[in-house]
Length: 544
Image 1 (cartoon, one colour):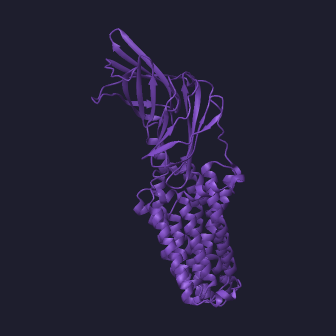
Image 2: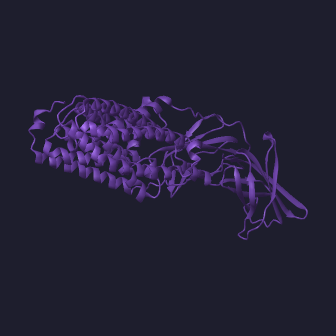
Image 3: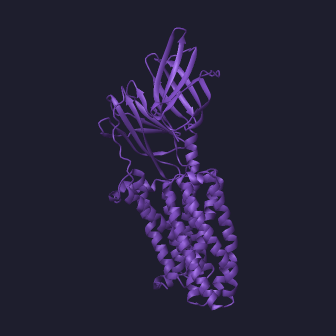
């Protein structure tokens, strides 16, 4: 049992109540502010200007990146043909579009526009596009190596934060509401909370490093912490720190204040998790945020009670049987709510069954589900086969139950590790948003030019739409337009389709199937008159 400082033991319970009230009010203020910020979905790039792979006659005055939701730019860089990186610091935000000023005249050759933004769910998103001025050249090299030390630190920080939130705060709640006068495992619970108090601010720093693409050696720089705090994950950390403090106060403060403090701390777990993350950022917000809250509180209630309960049974401590009775009575509705919330959130995130096997997020979910099946089976055996005998005082059954609870704790820790891995995997929901977006390319020649859009921009059935213009952006009343797609290095013969005019000034090709992803050459044959045919072409990248 942890030693309670004398000044805390002598504190008037009314004063501790005021402290708890103040901390809870702060937590509520944090979540109100966090919930009013825009949070829609994991951001996906849907349009760029210039288009990826475009060949321009002259350098553009500005660049633009349009996403599926509003974002905040973190790092914008233009890499010259000789490999020299130029930071782009002047930009404007217009709804879902980032407009970036070009700071200098660009020489002929291929350039790379590299971008890194923070999406509404608090996770950084990055990418790059290539465009050429005059004529293409060998693309400059842009490093895309994964910073494994930083990624490992982020994962470890997440796991220890979960330990603090679920095993620490959940354990404090178990002591206040279920354990009676028992205190077996209090040192473990206090240590778990301390782990969370250390992991929370460190995770905020790691978030800032990841957002800016900086290595671990830059952790002490103030800009790293300002960046991390400026993301939605900053609210998660702030609320988590308040909740962890409430949990610690419930352990160390007067017994009279333990229950309201522990209850406020448990609520803070749900609030912290609902403030950021993939699931919290999904639509509809009125459903997903409350479900994340319920899911988080349910995990903390269940997982937090396991270690104190197991140690109480192992030591045959006074009140252990009463603790077991309270827990076994309350766990059924908690698990029902926990499972229901988890199922609905999984359906929202995955959307289609095939995504379970086709995406990294889905495969992690399958691993988690396998662990949960094992955990639920073990918990059911404990509840229906062992609990009654253990409550009746059967010593051998209590030992078996203790061993079973130990296995449950190990499974819970494994689930924490799997859940922390979701930090690096966009959910299928976000991938579907990106996949449904068109790919666009502007094709410019002296005689004519065209804006081509292929929807959706991935392999399979698509629709191609074209706006045909003269070389000086004037209207071009073509007699016929034909779209030709070729991929000569893949052994695929050209796909030639005549376009029709739907009456809105564009030309359209329906029922077009692009069989494989990758870089295709697109050519548009424009019959200007009976005696003049103009052909313009450019590459276009089709997503898988």
